[in-house]
Every structure is written in structure tokens, then in C-alpha cells.
Image 1 (tube, one colour):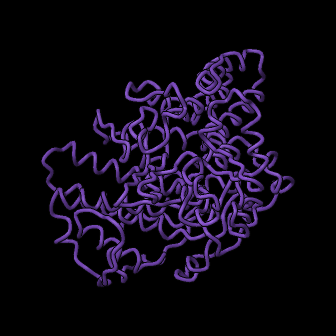
Image 2 (cartoon, rainbow, N blue to C red):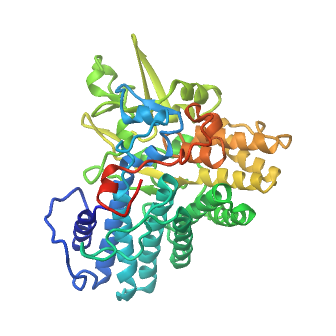
Image 3 (cartoon, helix red, strand yellow):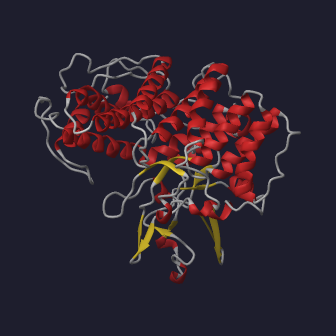
Length: 479
């Protein structure tokens, strides 16, 4: 861990009422907490800081872990990047995605919130519980990502406040311990979260249960959790599906875009705002303005960005997404425009805003939405041998996507249903950082990803290497 980064970031967050942009402030390496955790406002400010850190952590890394190894994405107009290597599962120690520092910085802030908030007097006990529930949720999310990406890793729950603490150089804990902490944190978050909270940019009962369902599905299929974990996943996802505040939009295009960020389908998203914080990985997907010779096509129909197009879908993924002409999701997910010999292709969901000839990448980044709960339910029911129930959930997705209800039927085998669930996930969640996780969880990474075929026995092949800086700054960390 980069200890000074931990502590200086914490000071920045807890001494300010909110976090906007970046600050260069020299901070001491040791401080007292007495003046920093005295009021409800201090705890709320720290929580704002924790979400700011989470946003920074996920801004570009979310699809790195969730999409780019699935062979569905590769280099855009700018080739020979780390993204090309990820697409064929060639991972090097110091490429993008190998440093875990930002995850641990975010965790450290959550740890300090959980340490000091219980002793602070709040105007309402429910407000205190909501702050604590959010801190547990953030920590659980970060550790769930860490365990799936790196496996064994330090497990820190106390919070660093000085670069002289005895435990500044932690050892890696077994991944099983980290997963256990995720489960404990989510159970605490659910218990503490007040009823009626409907936040989309903060934790709520629905987002906590989405993460619980995600975790228990992973536990069932990757950690030998079996039927017990599947039943726990089912309980969690049913709480989301039966929550009247959420549901499927009738039309797929009513989910995405700045104008739709209040959609009933969105359960949890990372907030981006023009003039406050913009950018993130969607800025890698659009057409580079400097390459458009015919300027009349700019934003008509070409959505231009401010720099190179680093990532695009592959030709194979394009063919897969375009195979069914009835699929209404296709033009919402990506588009193509030919101008002479140039064939422009771009990912379309998170374009932000085009104002005064300037692109603002201000679209919220969706982490969980209702359609995933539906497909999780289908996966769970199929794993529990309730095939008719699984098909009923698939038909909900079919009805919205194709305007039909005949594609899936009771004559399908369990494997057919699993294949259909994967296919619908890959069509439904283009550029939403889901493809890698669903292929791994459902045991098809080594059959659907060409660069992984025949590599099942390679140690840690599904994990990521750790950056040199993460190893060199802690003598107790080994690769």
C-alpha cells in the first residue's frame, strides 16, 4: 500500500465539506483524529469523500476488470494499447489494472467512517445508520472486486491514521477471508440501512441486495457455496424484484443518457456531473473529432470525443449483436456510420452531453440495474433446477428486447437455458462491465474466449498480476 497516499487522501476528504475535482495539498504524515470526527457533518463529509474515491477508482478500471478480457472488446482507432493485450489475455505486471492502491485508499476511508461514526451524535439515529450502511457497502464492493481480481490480498478493517502504525505493511490474507468479510459487511449494511431509502448514487436496500445476490452467485459457483449460497442469492434478488420502486423500462433506450438517469431501472450508479466531474471510460469509445474531415457529420450522426478512440467492440461481437434484426437493444448499444472509405463504429450508451460544440462525458456510470436482477433470478432458478421459473424470467427480457414471447420455452435443457442467459447478458449489458464476470461465473471463459481455450490448468490464469509499485512499497507483499 502507498501509505502517504492513504493518509493525505484521508485528510483531504475529512477536512472538506465535499470533494470536487482534485486538490494538491501538502499534508502532514501524522495527525490527531480529535478535531476531525466530532459532528454529523464530519461523518457525512467523509462519506462524500469515500464515494468520490470510489468514483475515481472505477472511472477507468470498471470495464478493465469487467469487460476487456472477454474478447468482445479491443483497440479502437488507436491500436497497440493495453486494451489490445487485455483482449487476448496477455497481462503484464505494470499494465493498466494491476495496481490496487485506489481500492485500498477507498477502503481506508470506509474503515475510518466505521471506526468513528458510532461515537458521533446525530440528529437522527437513522441518519447515522445510513452513513454506516454506506461505508459497509463501499468496503464490501471494493473487497469483492479485489478478491475476484487478485485473489489473496491484504484484509484491512481498522483504518490507517499514521505512517508509523505497526501494521502499515500487511501481509496478503487468503481470498476466502476477504470473501467472508464481504459477506459480513453486506449483512451489516442491510441491517443498518433505513427503510425507504431510494438513493441511486448512494447505497439503498436494493443496491445492497444486488451486491448480495452478485456475491452469493459467485460463492455458489466459484467458491463451492452450493445450494445454500444459491438460496441466499435468491432471497436477496427477490427483495429487489419485489421492490415497487424499481422495474424494467418498456423501451431499452429509456435507460441511458443524461435525460434518463432517474430511470426506475437504475438501482445504483456512479454520479458524473457537467462542471463537477466528467470523463471515465466512456470517453474512450467515441469518434475522435480530429479525424472527421466532413464537419457536417459531427454529432450528426457522429458523436465525437475529445481524444483517441482507445476501445471498441470487436467485429465478432458486432456480428453477434447484429444477428437478430428484431433486437431493439442493438442501435442503443452501438452504431455504425460509413463516410466514403471510413467506417465509423462507436459504443453508444454513455455519450454524455454535446453543448456548445463540446462533449461533456457527464453520463452516470450504471453499476446495477433491474434487468440484471431478472437475469440473476433466471440463473439462480436454473441452477436450482427450476427451469420453468428460469424461462419465465428470460421471457421478461425477451419481451422488452424483441417484443416477442416465444424464443424461450419449456423444452429447453438446463445448458440451453444457461447459454441463453449468457447470450442475453452479453446483448443487454454492452459496455456495462458485466461480460467477463458472467463468462467466468458460468464456467464458459475457457470455451467462449479464444485466448483462454486449453489454459484451464494454468495457475491463477483468471486473476491479475500485481503492479511493481504495489509490491515494492510493501516488503510483506509477494507476487
